[in-house]
Image 1 (cartoon, rainbow, N blue to C red):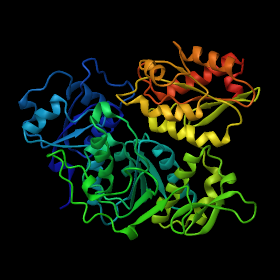
Image 2 (image 1 turned 120 degrees about the vertical axis):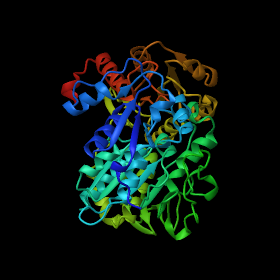
Image 3 (image 1 turned 120 degrees about the horizontal axis):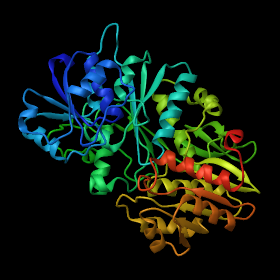
Image 4 (image 1 turned 90 degrees about the horizontal axis):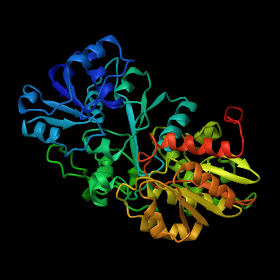
Length: 483
């Protein structure tokens, strides 16, 4: 059955970037819509057009909702930043209102496309870490190889805006929050890059978090899987069915083995793997035993990024782009900021910004990925809001790779408790100053917090920018000249 937004009456819950995009889209398509926001002091941005300004002035509620608010409403489009257990959602369900997210709305509309406006082909990327890098890399490689694509989702562009593009492929980064309210998204290829403790303050348990991530496989035609990863293989029993209002199709039928592409850092005759080069003895990526590219020719830092490259190549392959063609365009990819990026090298001391590492798994990936490239000691700056994660699970990696740790933020005490060589500091400036004084030639100072940033900063980008500025200030480097 074709899905027509004009036949539905909507409430949009949450008016951040995603919520605003939903309102804009629904108004443009002449749907009946109103909205609420959980912030009592919410105000509309000044940059909105006149139609949206009028909507925000007359159709937005920031107070408690009553049951009659949902009279005549059949669909609540909930922003991913709002949890499913808030009282507004409970009230909507009590009133018989279906709860979906913008990704699910996209999925239903995309399935209804035909004729002059064919459906977009969609690939989905999730995981605790690396998903933005892989999303941007897939999009870059596809476009470089002549496939019109666009990135959307958690990467920044609201998914409904993809309909405004002439791209034939949408490369979607999907968070666990987005997947919670998604049930019918058809994907040409899907991947769960990795799983580590994250967002347990929202999901409650690791199992619930895994279940949310694995919703990505429900309607996927192919899975791209890290062969050595935990909890990343599609399994029928992992599909989340804990929410009675979101019914997923059976995973059938879980994916047949021929619809799975594996990759990993070990040797393998099938899928993507590493092998020693006959020419110089160095390692190279191979696909089904055939050499693709030497690791020395990959400019993304760390072995975790080698895995990201393999995952991206696997997704491109399922969209018809041969790996040996795609690898030719790796050199022109520019990594997103705050993801293991070297921001300075002074007196042979490297400073690396990995502020995007907002959970333990991301920091572990950085430590393991960078360790083979470090000449001397590794000095770590970490801390922030641990989001309920067990910091003890990071201890073995700290003991193995880290010489000294400077901890800051709300949960700095957890690092002191779990790693003997920890010094607590009050500010990022203090951390940079202390780390620099401790560092010698050949050492690396790494900001990889293993925590969220909102206890001290606007977001992880702000945290990384402050780190860079403090490094530059300490060494009297002009930021603009160095950029």
